[in-house]
Length: 265
Image (cartoon, rainbow, N blue to C red):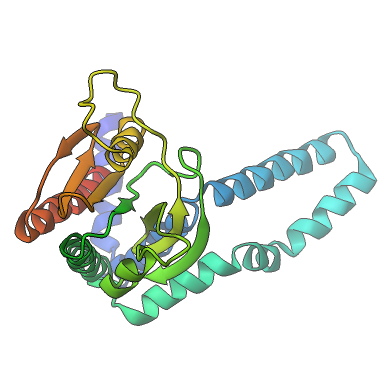
């Protein structure tokens, strides 16, 4: 009896839904999704956690009748929108720029395609010139805890920029470039070396660093060897050597497809 009544109510709700209601739900979902993307960084999560603690404290102040403390927190939450805008102004500006430059439906796909093509082209150019490099693509695990961040640059992913970063005359050429959310987040970063005791002794520091990061995270690392003038790829603690331009592009597209499947699965 209860089940039939429930299905009846659900049927009534769906029959009364209009097209604009679906559009309304879709827009809310997009906004929520964008907000979740903004909170991916560890700093943003910590700020939101702090706000959660203050919200609990606000409830406690009402229950315990802590008048002065309650008044202070009430003033804080009455200006919450302004506070959020100030705290997340960098992330909001970046999100608005992404929305303005790409449509909602095509933005993610276009960005992934752009990153793949530019990274692959940049890595091949570096290999052809005999310039060593480490290029890290962050996935779901935030890498701030696993590497030593060099210089934050927040630049678009362009092959010429990647080549310039690893020129021997560049002060950032010894470290790794980290790509996060479709942009070059930082350069000159130092990665943890692999702890695998059975690695070939012929592997250099770059290869060990690339493998080390992928042993602890779900990131992908491109290793450009200056000695062999080749491009290798580290993922999940495994290494693929001497990839051609076509093979490298395919592996990068597979990486983004896997990333999207995990995010939506």
